[in-house]
Length: 421
Ligand code: LLP
Figure 1 (spheres, rainbow, N blue to C red):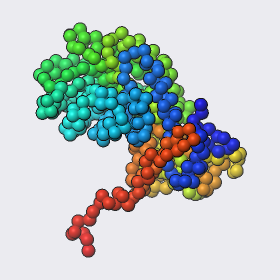
Figure 2: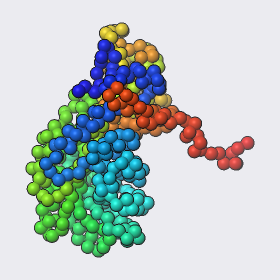
Figure 3: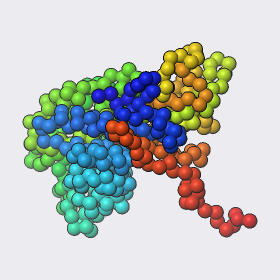
């Protein structure tokens, strides 16, 4: 099934014309295909149906409650990195016994929440975190299960800002020092060290960094097991890339083969934390052209969406394909244009020097592959509202997050008496 397609020159998401949604709710807005999310999740889980595994959707990619609920209905667990995400996962119907809490700096309050909620596993990233966990667990009279995030020192081959498994990165415990952590753990009576975890980066387009990391992890695993440490879980993180614009996309079947090669023979629960792969290509950002402004060398197509709505192009130079919503043959000749937002920064740019046909002021465009790390990374910058999110299923659509108007934000602000006149 095609989830996004032109029918008689009109872009549809599943059975709903984008222009219909836009005319009802205005622009800009995020729009997700529920069936695409389900299908991506099923592809992932089917690939691992033969091994003992838990698929913990990485909530940070898109934490809308409807997205989480769509996945928890299919049996998905959740990977969370804050108290807020834990709350969302629980509210979205994820079983606590399928929730993993990761993150390099969890507060005491967040650790308390995790312990109280009896989640599957807390991934610790330092000795000091283990020690804090031990103290908090004693207070709650519980023995939480804990994994150690290992830094395997590998190059993910992805964007520098989203590579997380090199020794100079802040994440995890250097793989050479993990053994000592297991020894030190003997002093912590209130936690149960059950597993190892890695996450080497995001938007990976090759299997070789995974393989390098798996090798290190497996070495560590056999050493620890030979020293009689009982390992129940192996958390392999997320990282599988998607196609933004002619990117290489790893086949889940190839990834699954690699996982089975290294870990298939261990009597362990293999945890996966996919985010982008599940939701990235299931969402688009719809915007309207405010104006087309001629420049000296090129035109500027100014949209009503901006970097506060979708930060990826500004932050990582990420390329997102931009397409018109109505595609009825050329209205105007192809011209060189930058597609920009209205925010007062030169970096507020969605695409540089592209040739866009069929575009006039007032037209709608879709910025593709915006389902992951889109809405979740948005902000109120320039005092712009947080835009609506819409989910489509077959011929129906529903607003799953209302536009968050700036007046609501102003309710959180106050002026001390001394500056009031
Ligand atoms: N597990 C852990 C511990 C993570 O840190 C991440 C992502 C994931 C799983 C999910 O990774 P995925 O399957 O989505 O690649 N904002 C950036 C991406 C940051 C990813 C952070 N960690 C972007 O827009 O590209």
